[in-house]
Length: 438
Ligand code: UDX
Image (cartoon, rainbow, N blue to C red; front, side, top):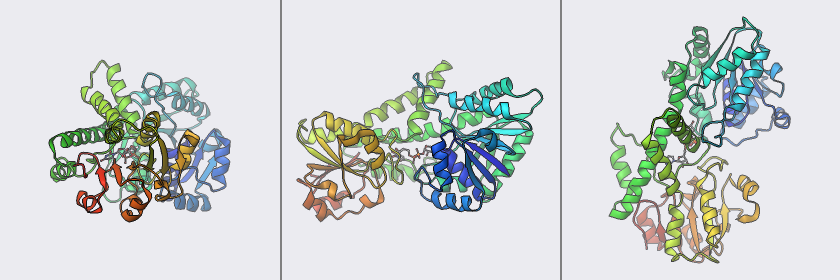
C-alpha cells in the first residue's frame, strides 16, 4: 500500500520506517528541507535502538522516501498519517495548529478518497475538528475519512512496540477506512493481538487514559516509597508483594524521581485540562501531577539534608541525564530539575550519560561539565547521584568509584543496588523508599 507520513519527528519516523518494513511504499513529508536532505542522504535524525537498520534497509529497497513537497508526498497514497507536534499551549491544552494546518493543506490537494489518520496524541474531538477543516478546504464531492490511531510507542523499544504491538487502537466509523486500516495493520498483529476498532472519540480518549493510568501507577508508587521511608519499610519489597497480584501487574511499579519524557507530563496535563473544560474535576489526575512535581525534588532534598543544607562549593557527579535509558531524549528529564536545584544551592555539577549529553549541552552549555565516561565524572566529587538507570550503571567497579570520589557517598534515584551489597562496600547509600545505608 502507498502511505504518506506527514511529520518526521520521533513518532513519524518510527511509523514510516516500520510501515515500510512490511512492504508498504512510504513517503515521509517534512517542511524542514534540511532534515529531508539529511534523511535522503541516509542519516537518521533521532536515536532509537533498532531503527537505523530498518531505516537503511527500506531506503535501499526504495520503499522509504522523503520529501518536503506535500503534494508529491501524498500523491497516490491511500492513507496519510499526521504525526505532527501537539505541544502544550499556554493554557495546558494541546496546541492543534500544526495538525489542523496540515489537514487544510492536504484537503486542498485531494482528488480521490483517502484516509487521514491522526497519529499525534490529540484531545478528544480532534477528529471532528480535522474533518471540519477538511470540509472547508476540499473540493466539493471529494470523499475522505478522518481516523484516530494513537501510538503507544515507548522510546527505546519503539520499533518492537510498533512491529509487535499489544494492541492497535483505531477510531473510525467509516467502513472503507476500517477495511484499509485492518489490511495495513494485519502483518503487525499476526500473533493474535487485537486491532480494536471504536469510534473516534473513544480512541482519542484511550491514548490519554492509557498514559494517565500509567503515570498514576508511578505517582502512587512514589508516594508508597515516601511512606516506606517514614515507616521503615522497603518499597522494592512492597512492589514485589503487590505486583504478584495479576490484577495489579508487575510492570510500571518502580518508584524513582518522577516520570518525565515527552508523553506522560504532557498527556496527563492535557487530560486534566480537557476534564476541566468539560467542568469535570478529575481529582486523581491533579494529585498525580502534584506528586510528580514533588518527587523530582526528593533526591536533591536528600542531598541537602546529608550536607546539612550547605551545598555551596560542593561538587556532584551525575550518572544519567536522559529521562530514561536507551534514549537521548531529555524532555522533562528529572536530571534537569536536579541540576538546577544543585546549582541554585551553590554546587557545581559534572555529568555522564551514554546518549543524552549532546542534548543537555545544547540546552545548558557550560553550566555543567561533561565527562568522557562513567568513572571520569567521579573525580573530586563530594557525592555521586544516580539519575538514569542505564545498564552500565548497574554493576560498576565500586573500588574504582571509591578511589575517585572524595567521599563514599551515593544518592540513587533509581534503586539500582542491593542494600546488603552497599553495606559490604561501606558506602553511605541513600535510595528511594528504602533504608538509608550508613
Ligand atoms: C510512554 C508510554 O509508555 C508509551 O506507551 C507512550 O506512547 C509514550 O509515553 P515513554 O515516554 O517513552 O513512553 O517512556 P516510559 O518507558 O513509559 O517511561 C515514562 C516515564 O516514567 C520515565 O520517566 C520513567 O523513568 C518513568 N517510570 C516508568 C517510572 O518512574 N517508574 C516505572 O515503573 C516506569
